[in-house]
Length: 267
Image (tube, rainbow, N blue to C red; front, side, top):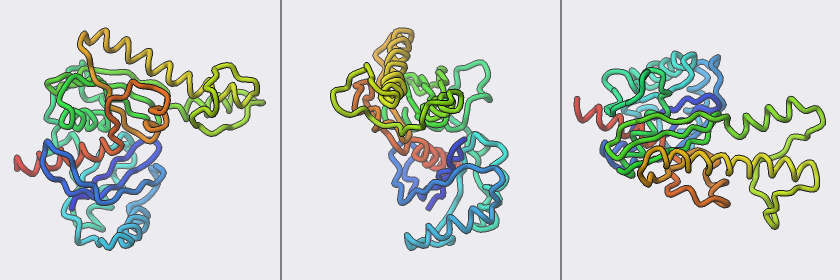
């Protein structure tokens, strides 16, 4: 069994994966998340993770390998300690030998691409081998273009919806903190209370941003690219927009499983 770790700016996701093949869907046995904190030690990760694994009847000896993708360099060392000290494995790092990307990164500075975005591109193409725009709802909302051959062509980075809302509330003294949720009732875009107006601005404003960017990206691509969405908010927005063709909530973890299967197959 593979322990796949996706360390993002907001959360670290740990998942137990039966890797399967390099180009097929992975079987995810369990997944857990914890807030990202670069100061969290390998020992602290182990206490948290071992207890959760025990609830599933899984022990450290059931883990055959560990693979990590991270966009938080300061978190990497402690995750490597977790792998070596508590699972007896040298962690494989996505994008580094022997786990190279295996796809064309058709951008001027390939090393600047976040590991999560590269892994998403790999998984999205394997699952849907056509022209794609991959939207990932994380700390930032990213839009990534993957062509029908599986090459990464570039994309867009926009502020995540939670980040946008936090900035709005912190900068405006009288605005309350609200939950991000789909609008209720008649879907009016003219609010009559402060809370209504904030919900409309955040929710419908974000949908308008996504739809507008997708329309412009498709026009520039010149082919009818399909939309793959991932991240916790994909289902929330899917209620009021028709732009998503596929929702893949575990895209990054699936991509890590595929990378691992490919690397072990080549080895």
